[in-house]
Image (tube, rainbow, N blue to C red; front, side, top):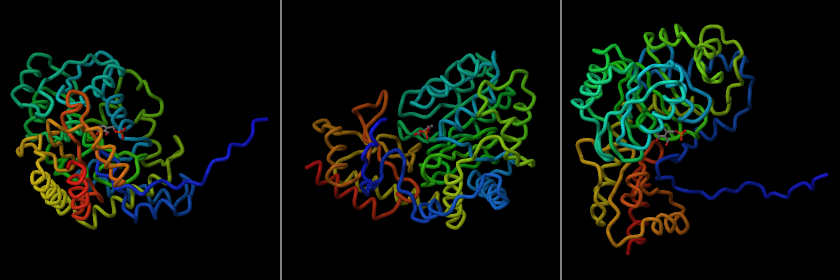
Length: 374
Ligand code: PLP
């Protein structure tokens, strides 16, 4: 017999989350998570699924019928998008201007696609002219781009230009909206995006675990008429359709508590109004950027494609970024992050997402950073 381990009751520190995600969870979302579990086929849960789908359509600004939360984190929704849209032998165009384009490449390859790239430096958005060239050269079947690149703090502007290029070539567009959904202007239908996926733990201020995904009818037709079965059983949308479509039949046990949380987070979005919410993120993040400039920290991304939900600021020459990040966490219970990949050591990444995008958080962060940098 093994001895029973003695483990203390959970008492996590109360942090202020201003990093690249997760963000502070709204108390109403935490309360929703403390409500009793029902079965994943309980009639009340079935009704709740409809509500979540309706609320998700509002957040994505889409009428796509096929709009669901995928069980798992943002990467699960991302993998669902690539695994279902990409068939073996397809050419898949992905960007190289940030960390998550590389993850797209890896997922597309695992789905049997051959990957080609459209390049831009880390810290810059894609140029539509380069996307046009890449389409003319490679004739890809699927094009993935990152609307809000969490590794660089860059927002991809000109989304409609990119989707127009792709559609002129009969390709499908997959948008990574993990750090934009619910915080930064995103219009899936108006911008003609075929597939968009996201995560709960960024601008929706929900714990990770149920991740939004939406597909147009055209994209779903492609999925349902695939020649080869999707390589993942769990993420195969033609199977998941039985649960989230009209039948509501068992596929896997939905993460019920996470779906409760997402529902409450999306209710908060609907109550605030999506445009008001985009404006709040912009306003609060602008005060953050202004305050950072006052203490000598300059924004890294240009104003033109600045991403209010994730602010990259240059690390001053004499400063050890890791030491600052550690001190903020240990002395102030405040989380921010350093740079990733090409930007490691060069930038701080400061999130301003969802319930974290509040003036009080900004003031606290600025005061703590000012103290720490002295
Ligand atoms: N895409 C982007 C732009 C992200 O920022 C993240 C997470 O930070 C992901 C995808 C993956 O999401 P997750 O970590 O929830 O699996």
